[in-house]
Length: 231
Image (cartoon, rainbow, N blue to C red; front, side, top):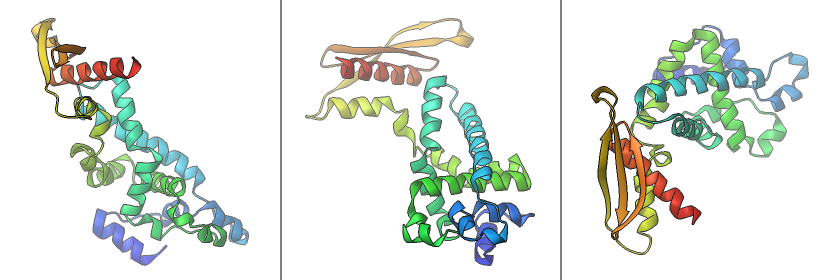
């Protein structure tokens, strides 16, 4: 394995692999294996399969813990945006993984090092290799340094920020005052639900319910967007 890459992993993320064969497998594309059949090496397709599952689990747990007001459907959409091809391929390039993957000559000529699908698989393969080498806690530690801070700072908030989406939709042709009004609070104190309606220019656009006022406002904005776009 490339010594510079090993140093970068240690310096940037505090990662030192115990079994380098996992890392070598993760960074070996099938095109390279096809051109080196006599070497009896393994491509990263199987380890990518494992990494995909580990990444889904760890990101799901993070979202479950940090977004208690989001229902299952919104959590699913948010997770899908985080672990999609576009996001993971961007992560792979950001952390320099694209530099060190072993490609066949044909794939190299076809600019495979910049192919989003290939880079997405590479990132998942790295997660799989790290999990095999050091377990789930090492994966979580890596994600705490990389992906989780992006989530916390709102890099994917466009997926769930319905209020902003509604505002942008309504104000395409100029400023419009949008108001969120609390209609009711229902349920016992420890399980209270808030009901909110959103209106603009005196017209009610939608209603929503949530465990907090903010969650109810987001639900109302989502409902309004659905009504507007389906008319």
